Length: 136
Image (cartoon, rainbow, N blue to C red; front, side, top):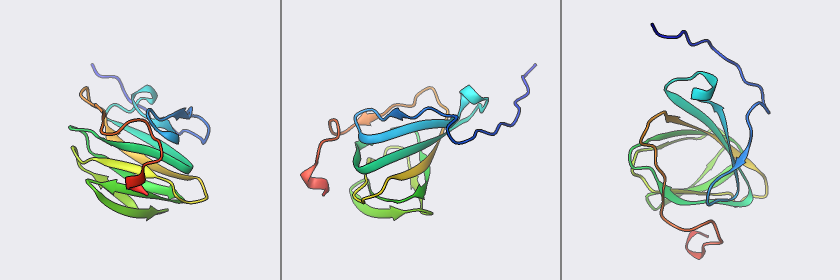
């Protein structure tokens, strides 16, 4: 017999913001995931302060679907560098190298939805976020 999953609503502030591994000035909050009863997906909120950066990395078996909530950032997808802003949606297929940087003077945030999987792995392609002359 399977358990019944009930819908939930989480208010702002219900999720704890923690520092993103290897990043500078970036936090992640798990808004909804298995811990809240969602069996198949994680919905996460990333925030990046002005000057913040999440270094280049990839996930070999997991795609990402993202929506910029506020502000703007520079994102690289397999070397293609673009500026995205509030309202823009981003699709990152499995295996695509990507990095994020907030070059604006205001905090930015985006939602990121990923599937729940046992083989989620992050392959960091550069070290902890320090100023990168090649990404300016």
